[in-house]
Length: 615
Image (tube, rainbow, N blue to C red; front, side, top):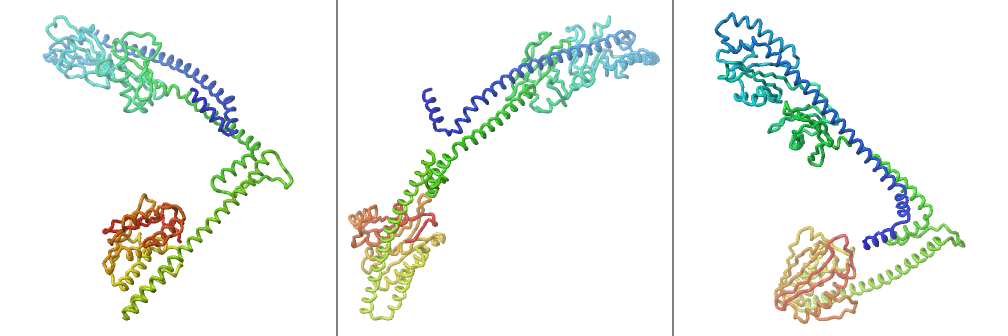
C-alpha cells in the first residue's frame, strides 16, 4: 500500500499543471454526477424488474384461466355427444345386418351427432373407436378399435378417471390437442371399452392466446412428459432472435419446473445460457399435464436502463471534454511563455540546436522570471553551438590531415616499387614483352591516379587487382592466380577505392615463395545484416605466430600512434586506419594466418551501401 501511495504521489508530481487542474475539476464535478446517476438508474432497474414480473404473473394467470375455459368447452361437447345413447348403442351393434336400419341411422342419430360437432367451433373432429367386429366404417367419426394406437391406452384412461388430455395427440401428432374419454357399456365387459377422441388443432385451440409477435414476455406451453415438447408462436420476435439456441433456453427452464400448484409466484425461475440470463414465470395445468410459461430476457427487460447508462456516460464524457478544453485554454494563456521554453528544450533534445526562444523583449527590457529563464537559455544554447562547431572543425582538420598523409604515403610506396621493378626487368631482359607489363602498369597508374569518386564498384577494384597480378607474373615470372566467384549484386557494391590492392600486394610479396605459385580466393559474407565481410585468402607461406600476434594487436589498437614501417603490415595498417576513420571502430581489417598453410585478411564494411563514404 505504501508503495502504491508513493507511486501515485510521483505520478501526480510529474503530471502537467493542466492535468492536475483537470483531475481536480473531475473529482469535484464529474465523478459525483456519475455516481448519483448510476444509483438512480439502479433504482429504476429494480422498479422496472418488479413491474415486469407483476405483468408477467398477470399474463400467466390469464393464460391459465383461458385454457381451462376452453378445456371446459371441449368436456361439455363430449358430454353432449355421450347423451346420444341411441348413437352409441347402434355403433356397438351389428351395423351390417340391416341396410335400411343403417340408412335410418345416417339420417337420424348420425346427423344429430354431426350437428353437435359442427355447432362447436372449438372442435375440428370427433371419433369413436369401438371393439365391435360388426362395425361399419363408412364415416370418419366411427372406427374399429384396432385403428386406435396405442391399444392399451384405455387402461391409463381408466386409472385417470376415464378421461385425459394430450397436448400432442396420438393421431395428428405435434399440431393437434386431443381429449380422450372412455365409453362404457353394460354387458360388454369381455371386450375393450370404446374410446371417444375429440381433436382440436393447436392453431384453433390456442389461436389468440399465442398470436402476439412482440412484447417482453414469450409464452410457451411445455408438456410434463419426457422428452419435453413445446407449443409456441414461431413468429414471435423472441423465437426469431434466438433461433437454434431457443431449444437450449427452453430445456434449461423445463428442468427447473415444479408440478406443485402455484397460485402466485413471488420470484421467477432464472436460467443462464451463454452470457445471457432469462426469467420464467409459470403455472401447471393438471388436466393438460402442461406448464404455461412466460419467458423474458434480462437484456430485453433492461434495455431502457442500459440506454440510460450510455446516455449518462456520453454526457459525462462531453462534460469532461469541456472541462479539458477549459483547463487547456486557461493554462495555455497563463503558461504560454513557459510552454515555449519547454518546446524549445524538447527540440534541442532531438538535435535542433537552432530552437531559440522568442521572448519579444526590447534590448533594455528585463521581463519577469520566465523571461529571464528564456534569455539565459538562449545564451547557453548559443555557447553550446559555438563550442560544438569548434570541436567538429578540429576533428575534421585532424582527420583530413591523417587521410592525406596516408594516401600520399601508399601512392609513393607503390609507384616507387613498380617503376624500380620495370627498370630492372628492362635492363636485364631487353625484350619486347615488356610492353605487356607496361600496359598493366599503365592501367594501374590510371586507376590509382584518377580519383573521380571516393568509391568504386567492387568489379572495378577487382579489375585493377587482376592487372596488378598480370604485371607481377610477367615481372617476376611467378604463377599467381586469383579467383573471385561473386554474384552480380556484390560486384555492383560500392567500396572505398584502393582498399583491396594493398592487401593483395602484401599477399604476393610476403606470402608467396620466390618464383612459386600462390592462389588467392576472394569470397564474401554478411554479418548480422549490418556488416559486409570481404575475405581474401591465399595459400602462401603464412605468418609466423609472433608476427601475426603483432599485426592483430596493431589492427585492434584504438590509438592514433604513428605508423612504423616493417616487413609486413604497412599497407594493412594504413587501410585499417582509413576504414576506421571514416566508418568507425566496428569496421576495418582483421587478419588470420597459419604458418605454412594460409593467410586470410577480412575487410569489414557497412552492409547498407548508401552509408559508405570515400577516403
